[in-house]
Length: 107
Image (cartoon, rainbow, N blue to C red; front, side, top):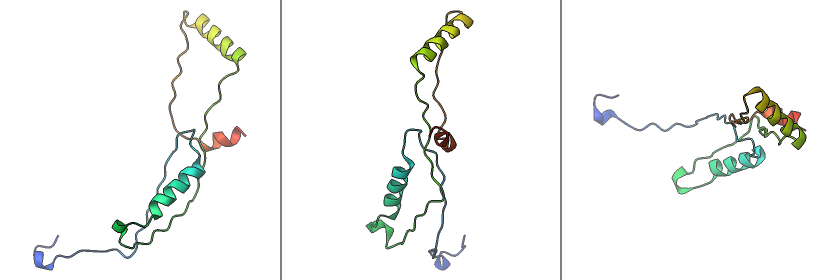
């Protein structure tokens, strides 16, 4: 920090770069999300002061949402859970994010 305010000034960078990584919810289409982000980041507005924004994608992948179990498998699962855990029903907890390679295996 300058000690004399008369010598202070603004710094404007000629070029800035940033890289973003994110995970999507399993049901989101990565292609659509990429296009949405690109349109938002590259949109020309008054508050961008003529800045040129370039947008490129290194990698993108869809998440995986496991399908429901077939009824006969689900019924057996519930039955065995009740037998083993003193007549308690199974509890399902959804957590996590996109795991792109799981979606590839599902095809």
